[in-house]
Image (cartoon, rainbow, N blue to C red):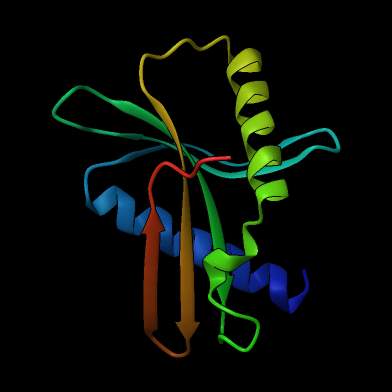
Length: 124
């Protein structure tokens, strides 16, 4: 596993832990679908209106020389994430009333400086 992959997995684990502490349920991690790509996290967020199924893209960086981590989610990447979410729903044969695509940017400066930016409901 290369250094970028390790940092990415570390960020995904940190986000999953944070969301779990907030009452979310992580139901899938690193789900791959053929050559289309990977969903980092699939989770259920408890809300006042009932549970919401959330597909979460996590972008982790150790610095901002190439911009903020969330800047890495381009419209093309967002479109691929929507297609992946549709494939996940079809494969799992899931029908839900509320679903959403979120992006979480993680800026990690070792040893323990974590900064999260959570964008809810990313549009294509």
